[in-house]
Length: 500
Image (cartoon, rainbow, N blue to C red; front, side, top):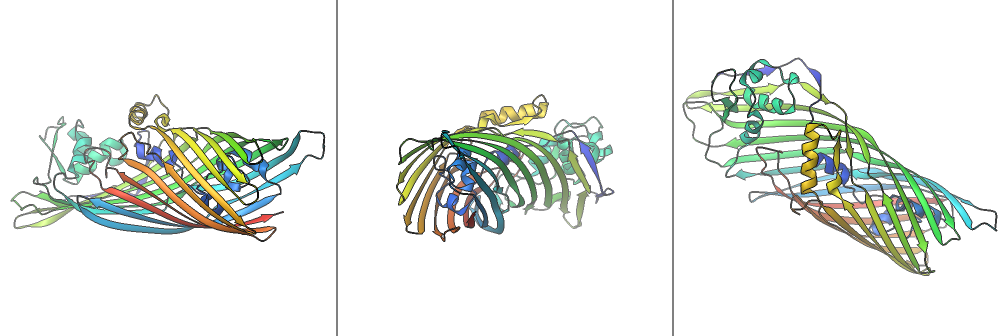
């Protein structure tokens, strides 16, 4: 077997072929519990309460509950711990980051006409980092059955040999590019040398016991800027609306390593390989929210809010690199480097996430405390890539519709006041968006915190923790084995509020 070094001039290519998967859609369809320290300490259960800048993310009527103008900022530290189990081998990876995750203000205008039932009008603007993408994951272990060669074989099946021999990487669609990498790296071989050949075999020795390492590092954010308006009728009914601008910046770097210790033969076979992928996704989106809060009695509050789908307009940039080492008895090793040095710029596409309906109940114990409960429903099977008439998107949308499910979410929060000191606690439970409950499991979270009122200035501190299990394949087809992941998120937030 010859040694092959493949290098192209650094460049870029535009492609209409898409590579979006269900994991890309779920990245934006799911929200984390972010916001002010008080909001997080009480589990985000603010649908019937309002009076908090981040409560506008749940129910836009909440700004009309404010008595005075208020501005606030929140700093948060994020600590993520991912415990991985891959065929019995356990590893742990941690990631820490710090962020200004919330900033906003509400301005209240009281109606000076005492004869009017519309008592006040409020305007608000608030930014929340609804998803912090900073994360690291490391999985390692010995797979007794499958090699990553299946990934390249699955894409090569049906591709003519002359395409892989005579074409350049940048002239191929995403699927053919994967076959090209496998062929040029000598991971797969054609069954025959005929240019019309469309069948391939693996150059990785059989027998199992493939040692694997998979490293994924992500960073970025998904921000939401809300423009809010709300009003109060007789101080009994509060009605509000949000117009939301979304913007996202996401980078993912992944590196997969495979090694096998199969006995060498006189023919070259792949003994180890390293496969690197770089993804950059960026774009904007729009959504709206409407909501109402009813003060049934001085103690009982009810809330109802609707959050529309978010319509994203996204773009992807993608690059790859493969290095394969082949060995044979009494012969020197060969390093086959396939490094196109090309960035694929995919045609912009659209993503529609599911809408959300939230019902809320709160009971206020005078000035001493309160308890609040939110119940939310979301149908993830309505997630869609667009344009829907695109054959690839049509297949992906059908697949998402079949494997994703309706979910229920419960958030519970409580607050107890001792003069100027407030003690808070919260609980959150969210069902898995997948019907199998395994790909991504249920989420359970607990939180607590305290706040102190200095008069025109307030300081709030919170700690929140959530846990969720998942099991997703390292690759989307051909080789879909993956590690079991137990993800634990611990966050500390500090909010400074100023009444004007």
